[in-house]
Image (cartoon, rainbow, N blue to C red; front, top):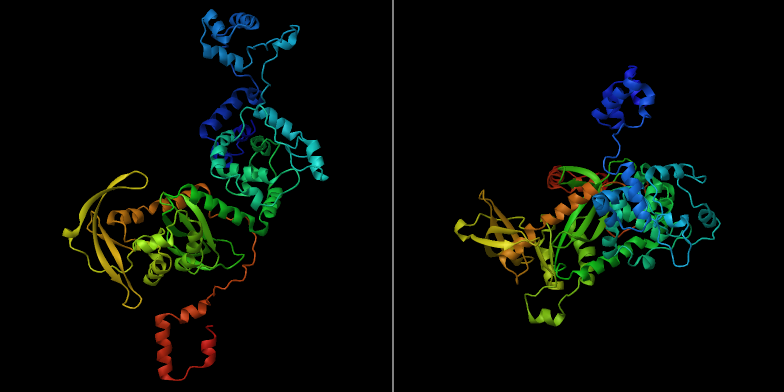
Length: 545
């Protein structure tokens, strides 16, 4: 009604309206035609219809009479020659009403004609009521909010109402699955108890609904109707963005979310011990494009660029399901995270680990297997994991030698963890990597592709077979698919807020970029050449420290 006159008067064009409001071209053309035919009054003219063709006024009067005589809808439909679904639709639309049964001893009054269920409100009615609220949009529970403001309320009561056309109403169907995965587990032990109108439980459920509805950051709540989302919580509305941020800050006291995530991770490991025997570890760089701080640069494989950001190291099972993640604002690589955080936590939390006696009885028995990419290639690390903890490692061979003869490869048909049957051409040898002092013997397995390329992997899981190790490594794409899904659907790269904080003091050294430049081989060669030419001033070396 407002945009059609602008087009007809020549103030703007149709494509301007389409771009500005995101409507379809067909909708704009219909609006312009309606305005030219009947001006503004055309938008308020009731739509012409032929009227009911099945339940005519005569049929409706007869059906209402039979329903008033305690006939069931099935009996009425059979008597009048109607379809049962047609009669039920008329009852749902309030064109026909079913009387409430009269209790024994109660006089038959007009009360018996009232529908047995309360009248459901629609979105338009709720929008008008929310806009008319005196304390703010959708703040219809005035008494409870006043009590919460003066400290006499420990949380608003949860009351669900009969509603139609609720935005994101289907998210209620996903809440039982989240509860089964531990959404409400350990929250009272790890998270702070909040007083006021919104409790800890309300905030946790709201965050769950935001994830299900793909509301990726808190700021996006201001573009959603607060009253409609409040209906999913059993409240009048959800908290505004500023209030929700204060609640999240209160919940983050004393590293409560980290302790909660740790307990849930242990529960997930114990719930699926058959999947916890093989674990994938990989890093994901969360990019940072703002100039409020100068974060270290990392190589981002998906963009093939060195960009600023922080690194999260994810630990997933063989199906790609996540267990936990380790955040590194200052990243020293995959090997440092594995040795300092991931492996100690897995030794503590992975269920079903063999006893020292069982490890002593079988020299090839392992606690569990960790799989990672070439970034974690280190013969010294493999040797330490095997001798100290009896942990097997599987990764790609970083320095494979010449190709093996094609005659060594055999066709192996196997089943991937997701049930897919694949056929691989594999060959296996025993190989010693690194030097005699720090090296060790490993199993080298190669896969021959259709193009003739040989993909080499190494494994210290000596009790397995070649196809088992190859499946474990080549199924690592399930973790890559998980990270890609999390980026697209949950925007794990987005910043939750534009606020900086100091990184706590750490024992991990931070290398000066100037020193790293001087420590390169070509820089060292230049320094040696300069030293041979003459003495080097001490200030030149100090500038790189």
